[in-house]
Length: 165
Image (cartoon, rainbow, N blue to C red; front, side):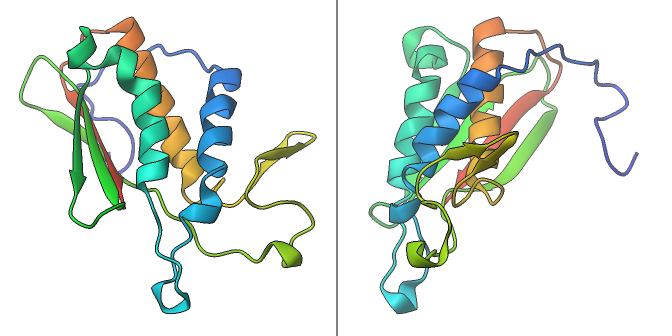
């Protein structure tokens, strides 16, 4: 198929844990003010702040702590951290999740009806700068890796996540 899992991939039973997702989402949205990206306006993102929350969430499941997750950090420019997280499979096949960027488009709080740099809820909506582009994705994939690390399913394919500055 053009879209969807490979035909040889068995379904993976993971549990949606909204409270844990919202917990990490709140942390990364809380850094949105400091990861605004507009160099011409003097806003240089410090993705290291978001990366720190991802690393804190995944630390119990890393190989350094007896877990299955391999975590590599790269910082070509100070404060602009990139992460590569790998959950190992049993073959050399890989599924890559690429594009979880840890910066956001600048926001002027005076133009918002709520604080864009703090996660808030309105009924079934969650709001905050980066919720859909792309800090929500960062939080979601981080929770995916945490569950893989916790449950340790046997997978044919390695799962690799690339978090980018």
